[in-house]
Image (cartoon, rainbow, N blue to C red):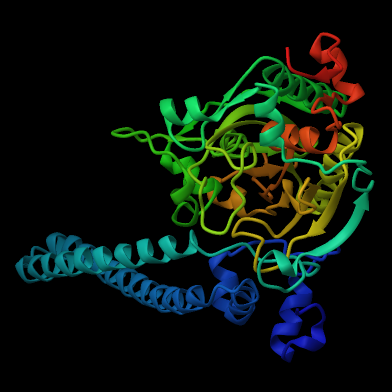
Length: 455
């Protein structure tokens, strides 16, 4: 991992120190100027991420950008020449001289300008297309590694339950208590859809209300976003070429079902400018989420863990660039506190370069202990720096009427994904008689119910 100036050649080291803020992260993101002046930094970022194929498209981007700039210069030169001809025609008219030769020359230049500008615009489209598909620049503290095995443990809360019996998985518990009907869910909607029943529905709602109340007390504003988004804002939120395979597209419409509330929350202020005094703006979004990812090869898919449809309470913040790393840690603290109040044993990991995804500059995952003694992700916390804001054109200014100073930073964090949290409660709070204890903080949201049991 490149973390100090000594790891670079002199030119790159100087540039790195200029761009590196006190927070230890880039202050601007994949600006074409950065790529032009310091392509080796972006190239190294792609290598660390394991994006070998995107190193090649970066070279294509640089070639396209060079050609775009050449054509831009040529078009400007011809336009300057065309203005000279226009002025010449005006002078010749005043002098009563023939203007036909100049008119013919002007018409030829007009055709040449149109042809060059068409090629110029084609190259600009190629540049923009590749720019939208390059991943964020990584924070220096992100560990280098491949896949989940490269993630680094940061801290642990609690310990595995000390059962006097052999624990079973949540699906077996829920089916024994007649709280889940997966067979009828599959019959009606297909694999990956479930019917939740009775007290498990109440538990889902209780978790949502618990997380919402918690976040409101922390100063978050509650939002229920649209459950569908157009392609243009979705392209701003994430790289659809990487994400589209897990999303549901509405046939015949420019609409996608949202995969998480993060996405419509990020796009909420698209093409707008914040005042500095209004930042950070912290939102808590509540919504269902829709994903195609069930059954992905090699992934744990049992029961509630990986579903096509689930509910989630999401933390989201717009903030000033100099504050985003503090906000990132604050949102992480909120998520950990939620799981601690639910008495759920978990670990926090710093996600490595090969597992982090395109949008985040740094990401923490909270991994929950399950009955098979494996820790699996229950939520993630990403500082996206200005990656999303640049794509969505969300900026900030110091005072009303002044020009924007730059792009905001965005941070998102799973507050509670209710399906995986219910799974964790069922597995960690199960009892030898097959019933499940409800965490104390949820009892008031469950009409006093303290145990999930067969009715």
